[in-house]
Image (cartoon, rainbow, N blue to C red):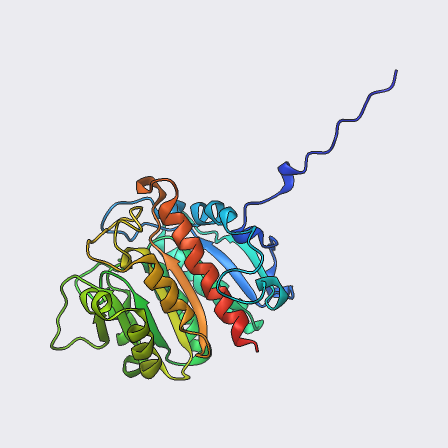
Length: 305
């Protein structure tokens, strides 16, 4: 009696990756130019927890974008110019924040040493600090382009706090404050001694994305720039799924145009943080996060010209 073989299951071996990019568990030794890393960490949040689920939510929502080929308004398909892989989620000991710091710094350092660029998906905003440390060791002090409702320069936080990263980044000399800018701020901060130029949300909404891009370009110049995008920089009607929503924020159209405006500058890394699917609806926030991340990759591809 012969046994009939069942058809092989293809789905059991496929990982969910951003934009269906190839999965690669050894990106240091691969030929990709950009590596996507999920950082499922939310032990540093002061608001609603749940951003540890953000990376996978962004990946799943990105399936809605993968069919486009040439993404509007670009005149080429991303894969024609840029090799991107997704290495999955960073491993660390849950409940031990220092293991996240150590592992993320090591991960970023190894990839930069191999000539890669990074796109990190958070996770809460604290993940930016260990990533910035590794990038600053590689490039020197960076121009910071920071989109957020909050400045995250608060000195009163704990050792692991998603509201104090840029306070520590300045103290540690990781960023060049004269070349850095914060966009979309609409919460209180010390305006007298604040180290960064700020384009608050009211100014952005009144003047529009072209004026924002002009100010960013004038501020950053050709300096290596780190883009840190907190999804709560957008108004909650465009990004409800986040831990600390603040009304009066940017539109998703403005945010896409802002990132698109980085073309011909020198962006060396991006993180997209604070997507919290537990408070999302119809994947609005996750899809917006995926769209912003994809727009950044198109900027990198366009800059290869």
